[in-house]
Image (spheres, rainbow, N blue to C red):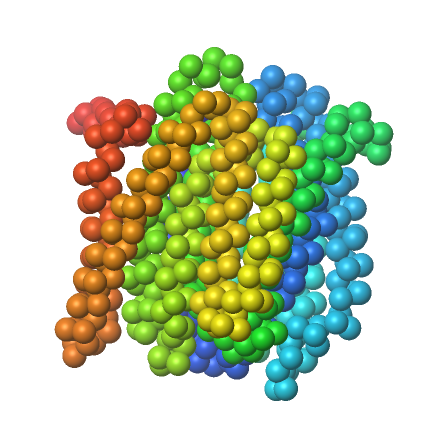
Length: 518
């Protein structure tokens, strides 16, 4: 049943996000053609400011999720109601705090947007819309957590797909026939509120036994929530600094126009990340159930190594694909080559994506284990490294230096998660993990060098045939080279036992389905 739910989640998410991704590309092209390019930079920086404000969430969502997995495993619906009520109350308080911070920060925006040509009316409109969008999340979206932990996230995906389609088609129409940035960004807020209200209606129908209870500060204390939140707040602050500092540094030191160009690259990666996450979120929920299923402990090691190898397959393919395709794609997609960023940016961007996706599944194991104090030091070091190195390297290496700092900080975050998983869940296997990662990193380096050399030859030889021809051939290199090398080197190993079993099971199910229909 667990595998079936995972496949349902993944199937819905995959179909939805392929459609959304293609439509987003068309919308983005119309935007850069018909709007001031600086609007993209304003929106990107404002989003990062609210990324920093997200620290006020203090990790309540992650802590509640951690406890919900335990209660769902024991079948205690009354306790689930209690935790959902705590979640609702906490998010209402957080929403109020964020609204206060949003007002306080308004006079300080000129410290971030330092270009002499800044359109302040546009900045304030985008800022206010982002406030409304963020507050709708805290006041309305808390119900989604139960769908995720019960591996029914595909229900929210259906609702979000309708909302996202509305946003994209509305933006297409606005960008093409009525270039009004207030309307362009406003439809996103409208759709977010509508989707959260739709989830609320569905929640009441799906979970009539989960009732809202009156909760007090004492309930948070009695359930040990305050201890977990105190330790996880460091994680939230570190994540906020890690994820939001780049655009703010670049806007302050290199200008909003550079941020605008970066947002094209980040739009591609964000949509691909959304696609991956929607597919992999089903696995993450399954991991939560696995960790707290005592009967599954005997096979947990095999599943972990299989999922860890799966993460590497995704990470290596993604890194090579970004290295090969980002520049040719921007060349074809955007109106002119002024939108291209330096190749040093692309290299470090690709490496950062590798680090993130390579420990994606390990991070899921770490998240459901709790005990957030164990890697707190690594999270602090990660945040400080990103902030300090960004300011140091930007003067010497420009944009590439900022992203290099992000890679270094991301590695520290990864090391902390490794410590927790192999200290609490798989003791005695840390050395094995390190050796596997060193080997895979060496393989990745060879794949990236080979792919870069092949694509360089392709781009030099096929320029006369247009950028699209080179893009297609680069795509073939990115698709075939890393996946073929990884399949030959790693699929026959013991790490792939669980993956081979799952693949055989899926093929058998498909074959049985066809035979039944015949």
